[in-house]
Image (cartoon, rainbow, N blue to C red; front, side, top):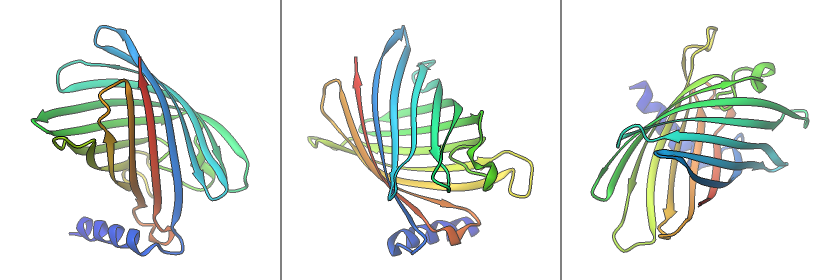
Length: 221
């Protein structure tokens, strides 16, 4: 019951646009290709902008392997550059270990991603736990529907961030992320997608909601 009330509060707050809300634009440009049989590589460049300019910047490389029709594990490395509250940019490193489960039902696609992230340099130490940068388990279900004879394929997703550390706020879910987006069916090597998402921390309603417009482009070799 408490969880349902929390989700309703997040949705209502996203519409009301409170004075403590944060607004960002995220961009992603990527390149992918085949490494060996059933194994692909990706290279990405990500930027996150707020009202003061670039807030976070990170190049990323990854490798994924199609283990079965419905399971694809992957590993990713990020070199992170993030602006702190004093306006200074600090660098760090992060490893993502992913397991992506998926199944297609005619035009409907169901996907679930389990991610464990580990940061070598933790940006949130001075101001508390930060689910985006610190150690976390992330659970992301997603639904996608391919509309017949329509260029856009809409999708909806939710992601839950779990803090595994010991401590006052550790070993519990820290944040939820809800997203609504779409990708273009271009039938070529170009992949373009966009989405609107909201992030909200648990037990931190005074911080408001983070609203994000995200645009992504990837070219497959």
